[in-house]
Length: 407
Image 1 (tube, helix red, strand yellow):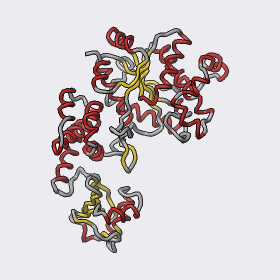
Image 2 (tube, helix red, strand yellow):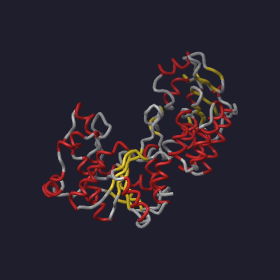
Image 3 (cartoon, one colour):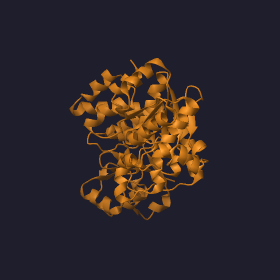
Image 4 (spheres, helix red, strand yellow):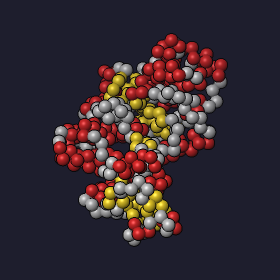
């Protein structure tokens, strides 16, 4: 099966510039393609990982990914889908973030300069001559068409800076530069990048008369169209120091029933017959499908050992087994609990609550437990008597567990 058909069957593909030509190209050649990642954080998150999985599918089919770090474009900021201008990062932070992202990607795709190519657009964007760039590249862009692009529409109401207005031109220039340097013939990206990808395809065709193509794949969203990959603590990160394998497992163990099949298709390499079988399960049986989803994705990101630990911890907790070494754990000073410390205050410090007010509402709803006992008093204080072997288990709602260990 052509890799395009694989991606289409699994539900990745949203829009494409020239479908027949792309299918023929992917059949006939080892195609160099690129996906860009602006290093605005020091780790990839689950939303990025859809793109990493696409690169994995493409590389397994013999095609050559170019993992482009946006060391130059990150200094401008992509306005796509944003209501405000992105925070400006220092050059040092951008460079450090980019290196960390590439190192993460190397776990999943080969980036040896042949089977896969690492690149950074700071190499050609940082030292451009402004007037020369305007003459060669700016002359190929129609401002009326740019302003009509979806990526600018939301910002036109709140104010689009000239800095951000240049982002589309810069991303289009990336495609031209990668085509000239590596004979890159395709740009892939999330569906929010369609306008920018079209700009790159058109620039390559106008500037060098090169036949190049663009393709977007779906963003990771719920069946209601809401972006997935966010928890109360923030994004679900690939870095285990930012999101533990257990927390990642729990996130996908608790997705809505309607989202299971889509997540299995996009985030695992299970055969589609199995994906459809699992997605069709109903009632209590769908929980088994969720467990498989959580295990397969955690295994893909962190390896089988960590996935097994997360699975064992989940089974122990849901079976009422109490504390487990694989549950998120925070160490706290024993002296804090000698006189007693309010449980809600502890939960705020651990990031389990945004505020004590939220905690008080949850207490009224029987939504907080300590060591498997419902907490009825919003001012309840944890003391040393609540710790067994220096450990206590806090539970928020039905799904969030956190162990406190005294030191």
